[in-house]
Image 1 (tube, rainbow, N blue to C red):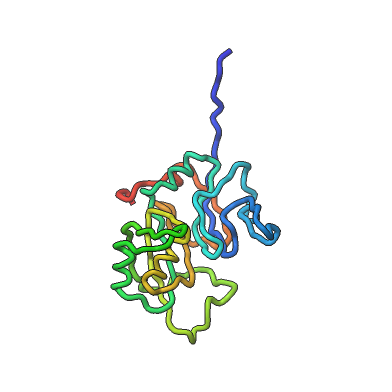
Image 2: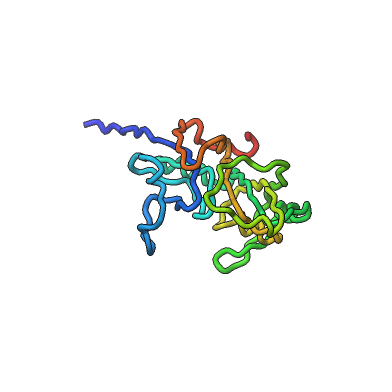
Amino acid sequence: MVNQEIEIEHQHFKTYKPIGYLSQFVYSGKRASRKSLLGALHDFPDGTMSIGRLDEDSEGLLLLTTDGKVSQAVRSKKVEKEYYVQVDGLITEEAIKLMCEGVLIGIKGEKYLTKPCTAFALSEIPNFPARGKRIRDDRHGPTCWVSITITEGKFRQVRKMTAAVGYPTLRLVRVRISNIHLDEMTCGEVRALTEAEVIPYNSHQL
């Protein structure tokens, strides 16, 4: 009897994860019935997993796949993740330079020096879907938007980086993972991807 390997045709997706959603399909914590999960966005096939995470208060590009090998490749430290971040105040070039060089943040009760990254102030306000709830009263002062691109993904890292240089994050939207962009997706939208689209390129090919 000849053993034949059955080739599984995997599926891949990208979505605009809304604020308030967890980047998972099952939640076993307290008040589980009140948590919004990814399964509410689309009828995903069995075995679908999110590639990395965005915390509950963050939004934007999230990749999903049924292929664990693809998930591992995209989560590689060589893969760039770009975020557009609205911060409290008008950020200075000095603060941006500090983030680019690396700043100390807290991870699991210990100090961690972030790896060098790319960051710059955006000249225009990004055209994202409006949030259901105002971030804060405009009378509290000006805000601005910054692009931050990292290749690591510590828990709430970008938020901790902006706070470390004196500019707390008010809104965080992931706009790119490697060669895959958020584009003009609407909040909660899901699009299918081919395997050629989802396999990441290294930073030198972007």
